[in-house]
Image (cartoon, rainbow, N blue to C red; front, side, top):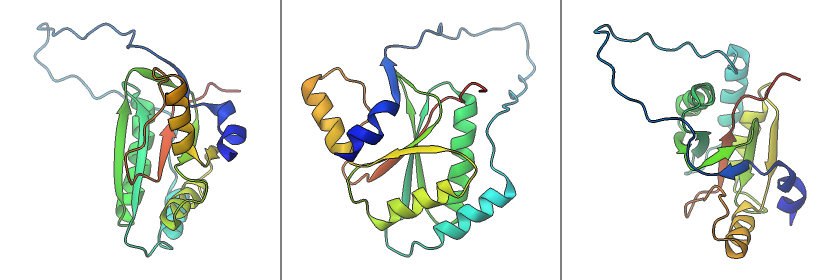
Length: 178
């Protein structure tokens, strides 16, 4: 199985458990609207957007859908997912973003393909993402890998794929500078 060799070392999940952030409590000290937080981090350039749009135009099939998974509460990862989503949407694709709770995603970017031989739209989406300067880890056969792991350990916190979902783009936290 390719997944065991390619994705097992990257296992996008660092562990499971609840958030260690305290629950937000309302404040009444200020009546002014808070300023939107500035998120600096990974961003798409105009050149990368154009390269993605060109790659996405190659898919003419009836299914043009992309799924993203981001850590709940990570504004930087969510902003990058939004940037990718906007390009897919501009190309006529349907983006879906899942906020992952109860687990921690490893830093970096991954593409998990459900099957060993993904459909053309999944391959085109991967090519579009890889047309950027971002480095993606990828693997195939994730659906069977997920099912095997869940059978062995029902508490294993993998990222589930819905029926008909052929892949997921995992946008973990920004890796620390090397």
